[in-house]
Image (spheres, rainbow, N blue to C red):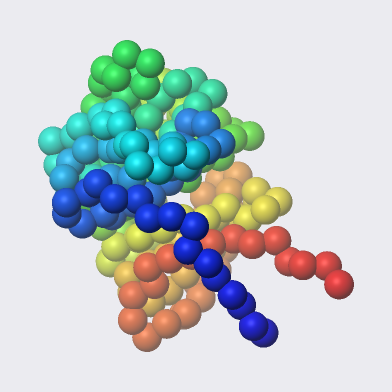
Length: 197
């Protein structure tokens, strides 16, 4: 397989480590954040300009745009989730979700739920209507860097720092399978549709 890549542009503006990049509120937007403790939004049609849209008290490990309700989620190294009203750029909720860093957000649209993963090896499930805690599970003794939802939305995969991938039933979050994937930490997991030939 011969894969060719061409650099389209380079986004410049951060002066320190970037820990997260996510889709923005519009099709042409990208969010970035990291150790500088702010979230920037980039217009990919005009990449020379970035707008600062939120700040946090800690290092930012994860961001999630919720365009349907005009909110931005920020996960910090201190285990907090900051909920920002993007229209007036005001914090409307600060949730102490974990004891350590919030590494990833996963949205279950059908259930209107938010799942978070953390450096403490746990996941939390929250109701997106009011951010009430619905479920907690400790999956491993190491960090959980990333979560992924299967295309049919029946399975959640968790990338664990102990070298495993945990597969959970998306309806009730029960552990279905543990895959010993690597000898070292699993830092990323994605779900992809299988190509039909």
